[in-house]
Image (cartoon, rainbow, N blue to C red):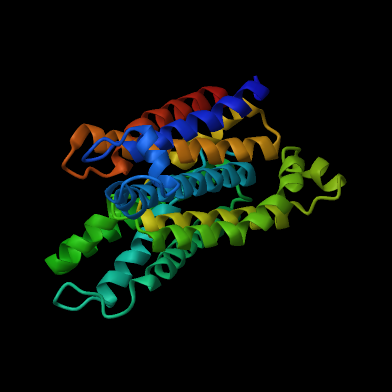
Length: 333
């Protein structure tokens, strides 16, 4: 099954990506897609492909993969299958950071007075603050997985309340900026966003590869893992920091898209087992495919209205989260 999945999954994600490039306000058959991709098509096809559709698909792939890896790291570090960036308040914390950025650095003409390139830093700061709050609260209870989840849900609700209050109390012209970002979409993708997220991937990839063996050891209980030479606390902290960074990087360019980090690691475990390397590669591919497919669905179903892709991931992810929650409750009864 693992061998079949390792062949079929990349092919399926590749097919979804080609379909996503082909479908838009005008359909571009695959032969024209490939011709434009290699510079042999018409000038109009080349402009559509390179300036509009390809950045959108690449950004969805990079962001979906980042959410998936962030979720896998959280689930491994906490040994909690319900852990995900959107559940533990990391995504909502990043939203608060971006809202503060909009409010602090926008003028009355609805324009930022500083470069928008500082927005990712605001998202990273907000995500880090809320992740630290969850970590500190959970540390007082010896990092109990269930309490970690409950603290995360509570702080996510707090972050959501702050976001709503800032939008309602703030000037309308700033609320419009915030709502566009909070919707979670890739329809404003450009090559700067793709470059930024690619750099984030390049920065964390060496650490991710280094973590593969420790993550496999972390499947053991703490005493057994320590007897194999693993520094358990250091590995957990490293995994949590990487998870926060990847979440913040993805959220800063595509907004608050949720549940990809919850579903993709579970699907990868079913297809590739629990070894860290194949599960990590599978989760990244599934996350990429999920977000590309979600964006494709909203484009095809609601054209010409731009519906956020995050709505589709939430429609699928929320029932799945409830299913996991009920199953976990039955296990612990």
